[in-house]
Length: 238
Image 1 (tube, rainbow, N blue to C red):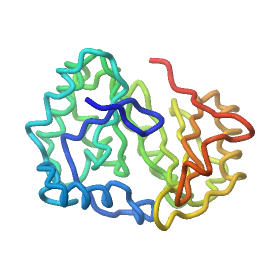
Image 2: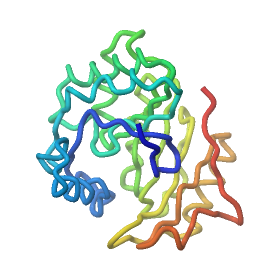
Image 3: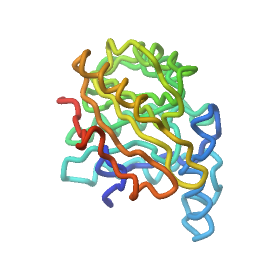
């Protein structure tokens, strides 16, 4: 287990790798770039490059980790990609249920599929230690928040990253955490301060924890992660 460089989690677990583009937020996908590099390095889990691949041998990893962690599930994929079988999704959830010492963060751009599958599970198969979220990069994809509200989860969260547009006013009912971040790396698109402040103000009004991840840019270390003169690292209590 290694420490993640992603600010809002502690480690990652990738029982699935690979994905494909479904919306503009995917255009400069860091996972796609990284998978090419890992494949060239001979890392076996990336032998298929960025083609969606299920990894049986990765399923039990969290059961070996004794120290409680926040675990980002499939940082290199999307658990609800159409090429991931229902049986494999169920097995991932079974591991998360058995590894109750951890807090698992499951993020998807396919919240309708998430809601469809997870709603079919028995009540005890959707544990409280599994946080479920969706990504929204622009106002055109605010519908994903409505779909997420249909997911039976104790904690539902939004990753508004890479934020490519002003989201305007949107409904935060049933949402328990919001992460905001700009795009980073080659070809990074600009995020404007007023877009972020608008989201923060709405989180404050709705009493939803707000986490500001980064401004982004080609070299994100230069732009940092301060907003209005400070860092914002709020997380839900579960």
